[in-house]
Length: 165
Image 1 (cartoon, rainbow, N blue to C red):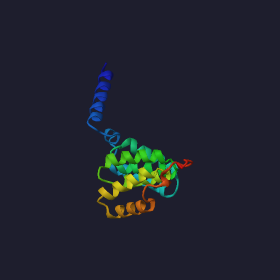
Image 2 (cartoon, helix red, strand yellow; image 1 turned 135 degrees about the horizontal axis):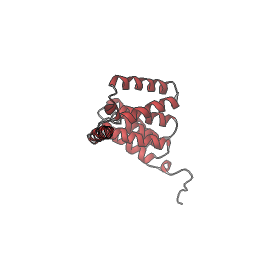
Image 3 (cartoon, rainbow, N blue to C red; image 1 turned 60 degrees about the vertical axis):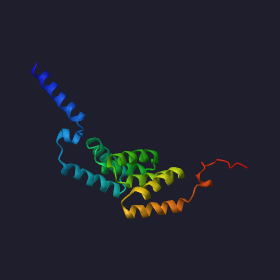
Image 4 (cartoon, helix red, strand yellow; image 1 turned 90 degrees about the horizontal axis):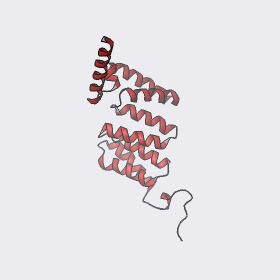
């Protein structure tokens, strides 16, 4: 009987924490220093091309603290290097939603759109960065991509699409 009451209290406390927006990191009391250390390992794996290990670490970080956009960007970057571009774009969109005014994920999503040969969406991403980012260097890079893509033209057509005569 006592065990059932204790279990009920724990369940209720976890439910209240989740409803209040707590992360698993908060619920389990994992210190920020530990998360920072895990991020450093994930980044080292990423930098050294050990993508499977980097993905595992970034995935863990995302699960335990979904409110940190750096973890989501890290996982997206791994997907981008693995040429899983649509997955990367989806993760970058989540990172942008969580990070609010950080336009790096939008820029990286634009790169992925280019790799998928979706030039209209790539242009949209780079244009948004140029219009809205407060980071001058990022705006300069986005402008360079926009210049390289150029205006809408025949290159925007899907591979194998035939031009109307």
